[in-house]
Length: 108
Image (cartoon, rainbow, N blue to C red; front, top):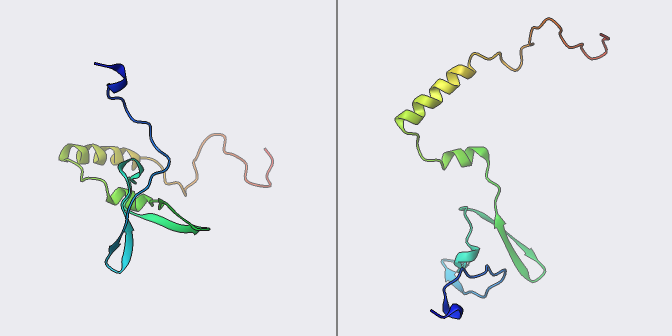
């Protein structure tokens, strides 16, 4: 096989030309594979004559909602881990020790 015709991974482009088409009452743009987003929501903004698309920040709740359900074994493991955490003191209660930290304005 000639080395010039050997398949290689194509370098990623940082610009491409694509098509715009009607979708309902708005326009849609075909996004080439190498530019596809890994999110369902994007932000669009105008910069001069250009339109800029970027992924919308995902909240923790949205990220958790998109996770697949846990298997029975995973759910059991999570319950065990949470039970271990329940043995810790609440964050809003003081930690009692032999050498407590001074309060603000107090000297040691």
